[in-house]
Length: 120
Picture 1: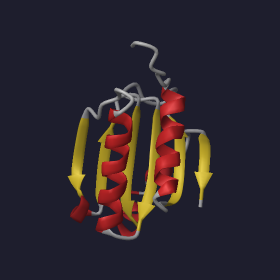
Picture 2: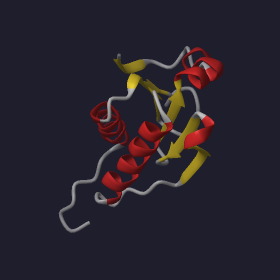
Picture 3: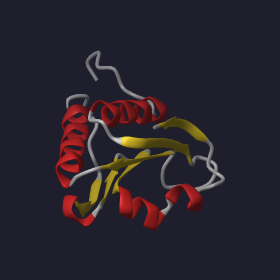
């Protein structure tokens, strides 16, 4: 570790919310799913207005966290599909186009998950 700051899952989730906000993502929601589902602790859900914005956010999240020795364990979807999933193990990021977000409606699916952050 050599003096590097390691982020706990909640700190990581807040870092991802901050990065999304820096890139003007919209309707950012951070859900605590620790008591609901065993595969992760938090979901970060956000909307973008273009494939270009989705790609920029994805690249910045991966690059910024790689500098802190945090790796992405999986990437699903493509920028052109309207939905991407970035798996940082304890935190899963969902990047949606507005239309796809309404279709998947994850906030309704995970209605019992406490909202930690909600940024319009």
